[in-house]
Length: 108
Image (cartoon, rainbow, N blue to C red; front, side):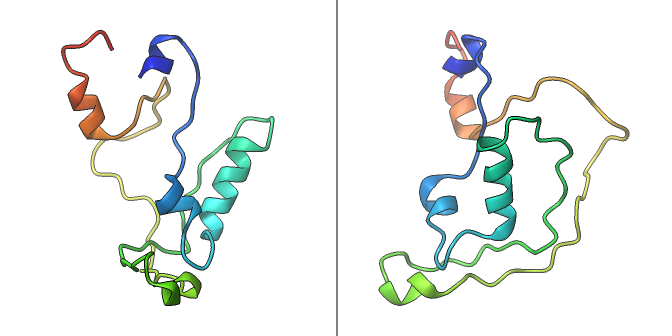
């Protein structure tokens, strides 16, 4: 939020442990997203849904046997919109909801 207040453009990518340190390597969808965001000068363009699947499986990072085990993916059905229609344009502010809540009533 300090960057937003200073009129700086930033990005919200994966957390170190939950994204970059994925057991058995990052998922292909995440690799492509990081490459587009950090290593290409042109705009990211359309963001397509991850069709390879999603996971909530927990593998203990402290267990060395899990370092080569990839988490199981559940089938993906693509985007699912909960409300609204059409295309919207504008600035997007995001982040951890808890942090946004903590900032209520502050200068941010």
